[in-house]
Length: 272
Image (cartoon, rainbow, N blue to C red; front, side, top):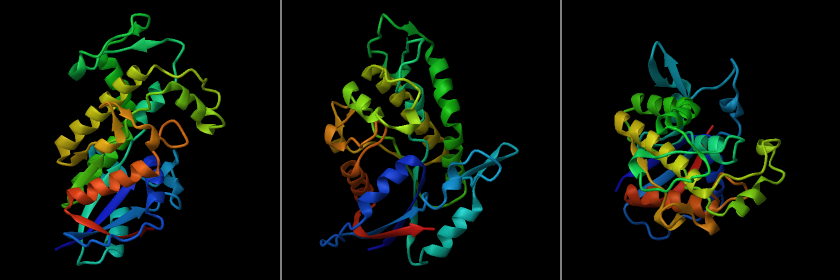
């Protein structure tokens, strides 16, 4: 039996994942490896989100080479006991597709996902080239792809990337989540049709999976129990806003990781 420390780095999806761990009881059935979760404290390192010269970076690009912030890796080394096997989990860039397609623009569009050409098109919307859509999503999440690449290239430990939760099917549910949401203030309230949002999520997912394959990270798909019809976030896993999943879904993700690593929940703490 091994003692495994899973280290989580990320942005907004990480912040939504953490509360599930509060007051979570230890597994009574102690089978397999001891899995401890260690979460980078995104709340008290808010500069990770700043877009200025004081930004605390995850991935750092210099002369075309991407690495991970050594200061953060040093925090891990100082916090984790040497008898723990370290595994990293990435939650980078979970909402780049939503930023582009959650709400309808004045110029309504549709597109083909090359790997899913059987998905129907809306004849009333402008068809744009799939390459243009992929380039837009990639541009929107390039910094997060650098985060993932930098982490994978800066450690010998296994790296997992947790794929973003699938989209919400019901447009009315999304519209309710927009009410009093400061992020979407002034952007309108017309929700993009579900299938187009799914296509954007699928293309976003494929971009991250391609990066995972290139840097030898392992992509973890959304847990089956959290997905309806192979495409949609199940209703009881929807958070209070229109772009994240809730505590139930978070629990499914943690248990999926524990299953992958062949063990049981043995505690959690912060990387401060």
